[in-house]
Length: 302
Image (cartoon, helix red, strand yellow):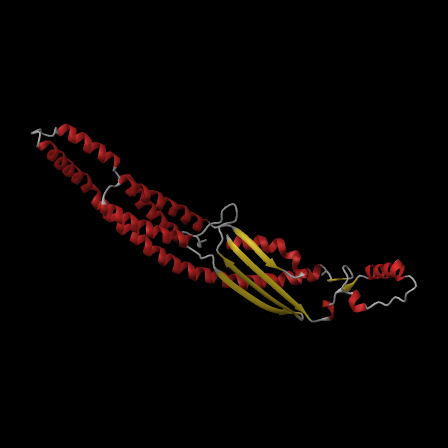
């Protein structure tokens, strides 16, 4: 079935005095593009999160934000005493400080590069963080996929309206096409007979038949009508298919619908260029209008 690329999900947890908040949202994109904000203590999860989002979401612009607030004493940054001592030594030994009393503001010193750094979690802490974030990701992705499914059903309903519109106009073309050649023969015969009337000459039926045969061959659109009907049937069937991941981790339904919509336009353009009939031309305009709406929708399908 069709899923929309647009969705949002969030989850919050409090574990061992640490507050977590995770949000995931997805927007339309032809490819998979991940943008994330992770705190320092969770950067070790990057590879696992990337792989999971690619597998579950397929394609789209994905924005993930994880916020961690730790109010315990363990949240304090570690002080790099070697770096701090090095700064002090350089200041005392600086020619600019020669003969001067050197004072040192500790609060300012802590802002110097390398003096403070976040405490790196050990293996047990990493395992606890991973377990918590995995559970939150389950919840957030469940909400996001639910939203995608709801919008996907609305999208499918709208696409069906445009497919029905195309099919109806294609019926008009199919009914009109056989009479176009007959009317052309009549118009051509009347026009030539009028031109030959003054010379009291008669139109050769073989010549007329050859000219009409050439016109019929050039304007034959039966194959295009059949292909367009087939494409419409394939499109309807694809909307009901279960999405299957391809080798790139993307879902095939949206891409398949995008390809078929390109084929819609190809056949409609060919029918319009071959026909020399106002009724068929008008129907082609209606079909291409429906195709434009379909192409806009499937850009957000996954």
